[in-house]
View (cartoon, rainbow, N blue to C red):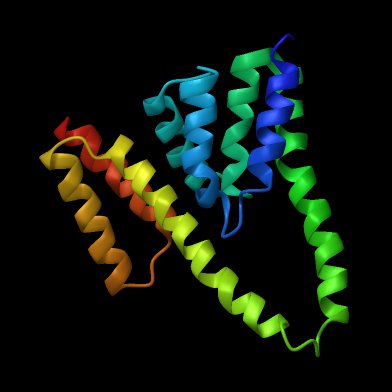
Length: 172
């Protein structure tokens, strides 16, 4: 119960960092949940994210167990609300306003500037995830194989997560 204010503050803040998707907030998610508040370990966070890739719905639903571990079912509900409500409200408000600015000359410039920001945040998230998931030659080989498959074929990433899990199960 004493963790609820921290959970609400952290996940509301993280919600507004998700420019480019949930992975964009991953470095800060790791810092806040693992380093600052110690609600879980980094391997647990990496595992939750991997499982979140398999689950139906938004992959950031993986945050719910963090709230549950920190403050029980009320914590899980608080995290869910704190993470999705600010972004939903901001998207709704900005989206309505953005449509009205369809002929505004700076609109294209702003969109062009936000694209590399989103890609940079996404890459930072990928780098942070890789630091926790790649810890030897075998895991590096699995990661390289998945990257090659993704670059070569249009395939459901969930199949690659399952394939990586199967290879890990057999080889470790």
